[in-house]
Image (cartoon, rainbow, N blue to C red; front, side, top):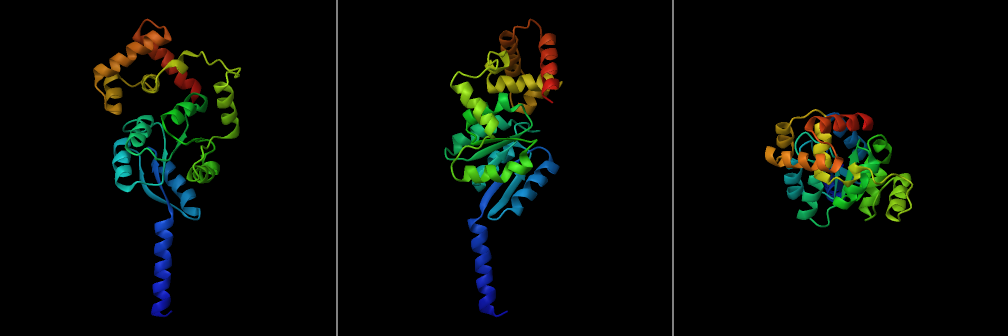
Amino acid sequence: MTNTSIAKKRESNQQSFTTALRVMIVDDHPVVRAGFAQYIEAATGIAVCFQTGSAPEAFAKYCELRPDIALIDLSLKEGSGMELIKDILAYHGEARMIVISGHDEDLYAERCIRAGAMGYISKHEAAEKIIDAIEAVRQGDVYLNPALSSRLLRRAAGKSPENIADPKALLSDRELEVFELLGQGHSIKQIAEHLYLSPKTIETYRSHLKDKLQVTSSQQLARLAYQWVESTE
């Protein structure tokens, strides 16, 4: 191969790298991140620019790298996926984010879209839908599976037969996070450390939860939270 050919090939590779859609993956399971990265890297014109399981690190790297799209799980070992979405959007109003989660999509998808995400994929179908979602969001569209999209539209139109008066639907995003962590058996101190909040703040959220869910004791609240977590797994 001549020097001219080598130079042209190198230039072509550099152009491909610089024009590839850059995707960040935020998930607390290394094996899951590796699986997502494998699907993404196999697609033409898409590259993974960073992976992490930590919300604080993800935010710092987002600010540094400004990826085209961030794939974010809600449950992280450090910090909150939901709050990460809000923080990124506050920093960059044009951010494009897709949630990939094992959480109940009927309860979380609408919250994620309101928080600033442009797509929601259940982990049960993530492998086969992840490229479709990335392509849709790349074009500026919101990505939801058809069944979920229909349910959300019916709910917005007030025509959903579902029981949307479920008290948990009345909880704020942060209250729902605390409720879930209580159901997973975490102490007030552990929840505070996980969410980077003070124990006093978590106590306040727990008090709000008892009021909204109409329970009188912390033990009753923990039992209700545990039952809910078990029912959603």
